[in-house]
Length: 125
Image (cartoon, rainbow, N blue to C red; front, top):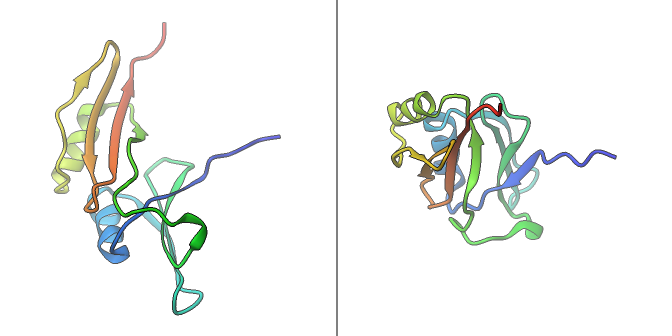
């Protein structure tokens, strides 16, 4: 049996502001933006090349979390310098690249303070 991680809720205070950030600055694709009722909204976005998406939601009682409380989501990239430059070029405030013995990291935050990390792992020999 497969257990595929394909959707991660990201807690935000303002869905429209977060959607704009993830679409325009982080370069995520908007897959869905639905409002099945007056109190429920679901926005699903996917990073380029990823099989896993994020969910920005309102009115979904099973996933209530304080806005900005998510930490350390990783986006694995082939070239961290290029990925960092691309995001910085779109206005994302990026941390410097750190090399921790063959694994490189560079972090950023969304407008609510949820943290993300770019990760590049050197090829294994």
